[in-house]
Image 1 (cartoon, rainbow, N blue to C red):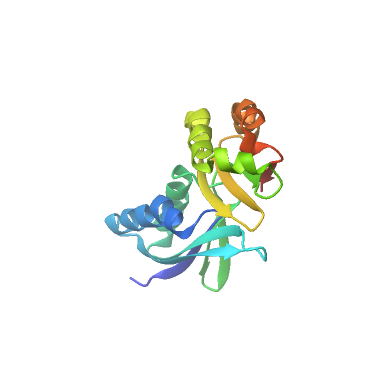
Image 2: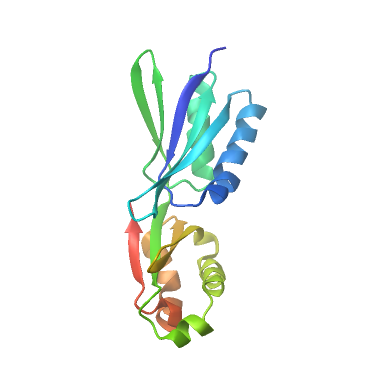
Length: 186
């Protein structure tokens, strides 16, 4: 059976190792187990600033009528955000199948303008754990990025409004969150 090349565009901001652990490796195992295809690679697209824009997974799929819905459902269950899509071509017709149901939120921590004491006494890893605890089953941090002037934490869950509400008090109290930007990811 001839393989059809496909690309799973993941509207998620995460580092390559995180992408592999959460999406690529489990998808490859599931595709091979079900005889539907294989993962052939993956990548991360960056903005001019060096920040992550989105991720993708290269695939070879067999029996596209079964494989395409399988991939979309599998990646959605693994936490794929809205705006994700499976792209492939059949008989010279380009097809895009949307998937994903989660919403994204980025917290940009100011890395230059807070008092030095804050950077010395606060730990982003502690904040990371606190936010995941507060989100519980309503969301999680799936990725991060460290830039020249700020650090971003990328949260994904069923509702950005709900996630904002769950973490608001902690964000207001934790010194490292002062002057942080909170941005909904589309």
